[in-house]
Image: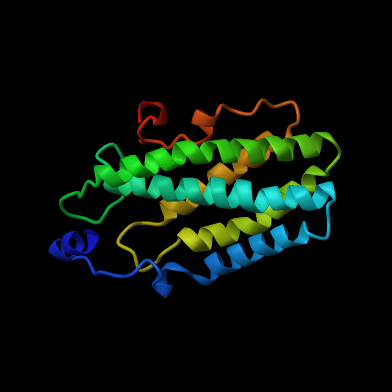
Length: 197
């Protein structure tokens, strides 16, 4: 169903598993996430648990996913920031609505991960472990969303991911800070309100 539309619009038709969609940084990010999860089979320490939450809930499900949602919203929605290719804008409102529903569901996972990391910090896990883990993963997120061959300026996506990760660090390393509601955690600028879909 998508291929004929893409062909009619002059887009190159590719498979979702095309290697071009998996840069080295993406592969490394998920390899590290898998190692952090596997470590929990042997190491049940609060520090290992905090690192695993950082990898999965805060980077993959939160920052990387939200940056992807922002890119889709900005590129393919009439309410987005119009990051799409030059020329007549293409609006894929059904795709954007579907992504909005996924984003709404993912918010609970993000909130859970943030709550657990904040709890672990309040119970004695050194906040530097959180900051260091997230700081080490940020270049991998940036490399994942950066695409020099794209017609879309991916600098905006890198800046967006950096800002979101910085905000996550601020919130979870301050044990007195209140976690924002789920709707705020998954809010995408220019996006549809998740409570309306």
